[in-house]
Amino acid sequence: MSNKNMNIVFFGSPQEAIPSLKRVLEEGHDIRLIITQPDKPSGRGRKLNPPPVKKIAAEKKLPVFQPKKTRKDPSAVQKIKSVNPDINVVVAYGQIIPGSLIYLPPYNSINLHFSLLPRYRGASPVQWALLNGEHKTGVTVFQLNEKMDEGDMLSQEEVNIHHGETAPQLKSRLAQIGAYLLVRTLSRIDQITPLPQKESQASYAPRIKKHQGQIDWNKDSHFIERQVRAMKPWPSSFTFFKQKRIKIHQGVAENRKVSSFSPGEIVEVDKTGIAVCCGDNKIYRIQELQPENKKNMSAYSFSLGSHIEKGSQFS
Picture 1 (cartoon, rainbow, N blue to C red):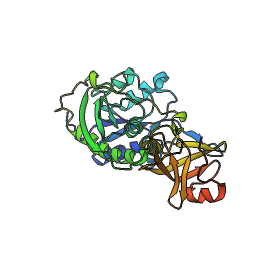
Picture 2 (picture 1 turned 45 degrees about the horizontal axis):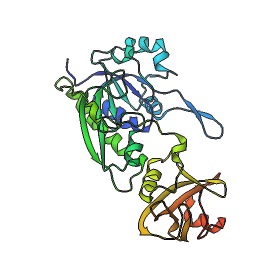
Picture 3 (picture 1 turned 90 degrees about the horizontal axis):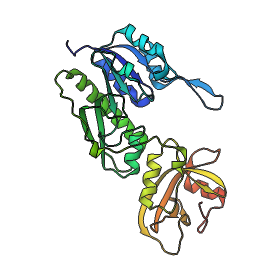
Picture 4 (picture 1 turned 180 degrees about the vertical axis):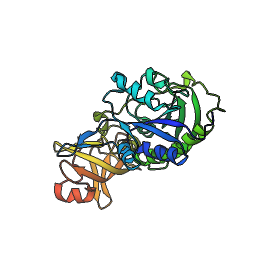
């Protein structure tokens, strides 16, 4: 069959799945069904919020199915069978897809993953690449199987990580680059020889947990800078001052050595921010933060109203 116009079931949920969804439609493929996560309560009123992909589906008048647990929902197989797809396309769906769905269409299922597989398999590849200080990452289109991101690779593109880039910024770039790689892969799917992943090179990126946002001032200043960039927007990096949680949204590691200060101790406060001593006796300068139950503010504004001064301690 010609790959120019395929019938597709698209699995995806968050913002970073949208560029792929739009590119697939622009290329003239027929999206027969969108499978996305259920609406989730959010905000103070716990109002049900649809996933970003569902909003685009409504705009484009595309049918949507939102199973609570795809692998335990027998109606999912019937739904997919009824639309007769050539292939399933998966981008940041957020649920495990069972073999009964993976192998249903003639071309089975392909997945766009935000790393250079086999590195950083798992739920949080972008955050871990930043946290570990990688200079490069990328996007991979691979054949889905029943193991975690272990299927044969169809295409891959390497991407440089920009200096100071945060997780949302990097995700947004990878989403755009990945969308183009995905449609190029679909157009050549009959000509591509799948490439098995090298197990010896595999590494993992498990889902980030809330406690991983907590700053340990005994770590070196560059690690703390990477942590703040990697943990945006969730769970956010945080520390404590006078038993109150403070989220740190932006800052910079400085190579200046300081002596006679302990980790977490404030070295200076001025208009450029709050300079904190780290485990390598170098400074991490907090530029933007958010006190408990308050809005984002500059670190200097916070210092004016909170009696924070040289010698004060973050815990």
